[in-house]
Image 1 (cartoon, rainbow, N blue to C red):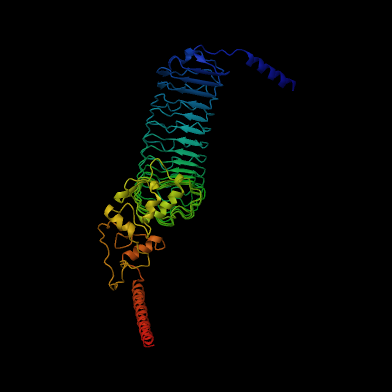
Image 2: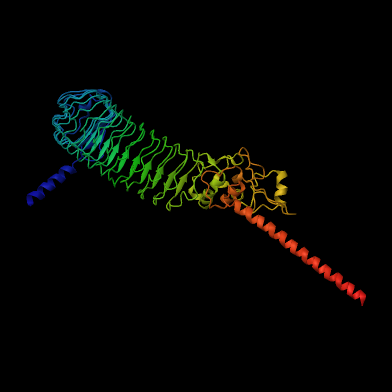
Length: 581
């Protein structure tokens, strides 16, 4: 115990001594130096202390890295040499750095790596060779780095890799090969990386993947393949990746996907398939993937989707289907997605939204429907969305006729839910073109009532009669009878109004001879429209009742006349008798 106390006191005295910081450097803490003066070739002239544990060299002028540049630095653990053009590295440069754990040679313009340069660094855990100009690597370049955990080779000019390049890196956790020019990956390239958790391959020129390319990566959690030129994915390519959580396949040239491609990726939380020329999806694409939270399927050529393609994704919170060519959606497409919070259907070609599409989305908070071809929505389209916070409806050709009023009633009750940056506007009819849906008043809604003609469609000449004459009730004949005397009603059906243009005094809902598509007969104006166009199923009954009324009126009139004649005769007889007396 006494020996330990003496050793501790001795170390304290050593650390109390002033640290000799080089003149051209800054020493933020003991045993660390940051230097940015001089050139790569003049590093020995900096007279760096050999007991440094952390060394940062940056923005040095170009030069050759000599074999004695770091001589004697046997305790150095972290070294960064970046933003300093290195013409070449002499063999043996890192021979004394046997305790080095982190080496960063970023943005140094390296074009090649000597074969045995890194062999002495057996304790190395992190190696950064990114943002250089490496065009090739020897298959033994990393042969001695058995403790390496992170390797960054991104942003170079690599076009191919030796199959045995990573054969000794059994402890590697993260490998970044992105932003190179790789066109092909050898079949056994990743076979020894049993501990790999993150594999970054995006932004290359990969044309295909070998079958079984990733079959031994059982611990892989992130696989990034977006931004390549993949035309197909082998069936079962991801079946062995039971731990995979993030997978990106966007911005490739995939036109189809194999059936059951994600059948065994139960741990997925984020899947990117966007910006591919997908023409269709198989009926069975996913298995039970309860943890999937984000699915990106935007920017495809899909015209529709299989009705059950999203079954098993009960944890989905974000579904991106925007910027595509979707023209129709199955009514049960989103069934079971009760945790969905954001649904993007904008920038498509949707003309109709199925009434049952949104029924199960009890957690939906944001719905984007802008930039489609929607002309109308049912009045209860969003009634099953109790948590809805915003719905975007702009840039749709809304047809503001009577079919839209039930939805407008909902809109007037929830004006705060509609995005105001690009508000929805009427495109037709012409009298309402350009008006915001939220600005249509109750007077507009009243124009669809069976008792009130539209004030917007009345001309000055027609307005006066409209105020003096009583509009026929829904139970009256299509052509009102004059008030002076009853006129026999013709037994033939009334001639429907021309469909080319409504008459000035005809409400918009009754302007055509056939009901508008989607008309709800239970709505107050729906029944009136059928009567006005001669389509009521009770016309014959109406005419029969009218005839009976007319006959009853004539009979009553005859009885009254007969009674008055009798009374007159009795009165004359009474007068004669009085005259005789």
